[in-house]
Length: 236
Figure 1 (tube, rainbow, N blue to C red):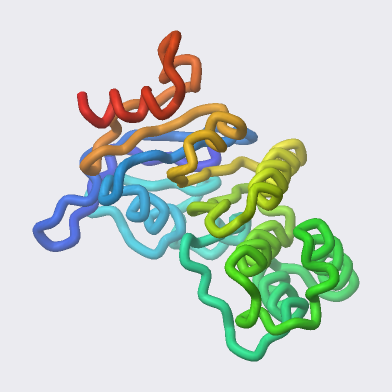
Figure 2 (figure 1 turned 45 degrees about the horizontal axis):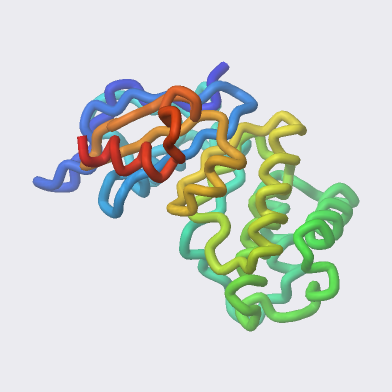
């Protein structure tokens, strides 16, 4: 079973064409990088995968099901680009809330919350208010909630935003560790150097269409890096 699949997906918002006959898929257990300039359709693709929007044409499958069905989304951990944090809620309570949403309860919930907070560098911040955290610590809290429940698929939108160099390296480790435990990962980011370190395959969107797709070896030519390949695909 594929982690997800777009089959000839077109999405319009009124007269604006956001995606045009997009075909892409991700096998289970890989990390796929989703690249593109601003307005290329990356956010729309994520909204379709999460069931927040429906395609105008074509179909989207998430873990073998329609993403608008709760059973499909139950296996997904999601870190949005703009994480909205509740007011006056402790870091631990925030994690407990998302753990319950991930289907955890009882001792399993309590143990996973403590383990993931420690893993994401928030063990000594558990009693602090989540809305009072610095941007980097808030990003760590967002990563922690996405990892709860050992999701089958991680959807990460600009996952290293606000993180210092140590945090960026640790985020890379969290992604690689999730993959070692069988998770599939979709990363949407402009940090191309991190894509090269974590992704098996990349898809480059431009103006709602797939400009390039494949493994890094297929996308990046000899003497290039991923940035060169990205610019070449977008300008073609």
